[in-house]
Image 1 (tube, rainbow, N blue to C red):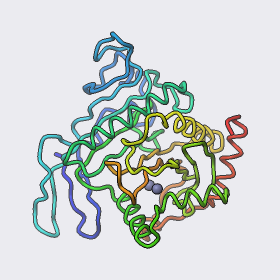
Image 2 (cartoon, protein in one colour):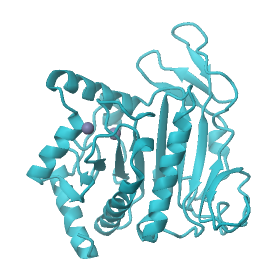
Image 3 (cartoon, rainbow, N blue to C red):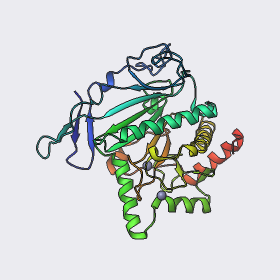
Image 4 (cartoon, rainbow, N blue to C red):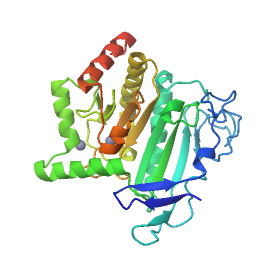
Length: 331
Ligand SMILES: [Zn+2]
Ligand SMILES: [Zn+2]
């Protein structure tokens, strides 16, 4: 049975989840997709449908969906209260939380940068609505969306999908970013993310692309090669509070970033992480997407020191991505 254990040596909670490695995956043990994707229409991955975008009049659980949200039970159990038990230094808590899988497209070969525009906007709307929904649970301290693409990026399915998680323990990286932004705010009186955006748009060295509402940039201290963030110009802390009418601009920029990366780096495996706090109105935090191509392996030095070795200066990465966008005709 899955359990959270509190790391007594630092802020982390670790989910000890013995079933995790045994779940159905269409990659199988050799990293090759199964002949039929278990997430395809008409297939039953054994997961319950909790939401879907489908033509009007079509029935729940029927095969004619366009985007589908499935419940992913088994890893995090819903019904037990989150209570920290045990004695220091061996604290633990039941693995309460909710996990959902957003199946993005009926076609297992579909790629996010090739979805029709209205489909991608619909998908962002589903992400937004699910995150807002999970954040309504009073026990949820953190909501996150993770999209792993490619077996080397830890994807469980070759079929395009994202995982949305609501958990009772905080996300360590969001917490670290928030702590830094809070300290900056109390010193300078402004949002760290908003100030970085203003600077990067003026200086342009690390600017990848931009439109009226969003900016894509490679961060000053990029932890991995080609790490790219997409940040809204308007200050907002929760993705669930993002205005719906802004989503077409987000879709355009996301498509252009993913396509530039595919061109510049020959279709790398990647992680797409949505960092946000559960609710809007947080003046210190500013939600963003992080796109992290999986190009290097984390070596022992990184694990040992807690900092990262990145062989690609973010200024070079931004320039390659801008050039790739020109080649793609989307720049
Ligand atoms: Zn801000
Ligand atoms: Zn972040």
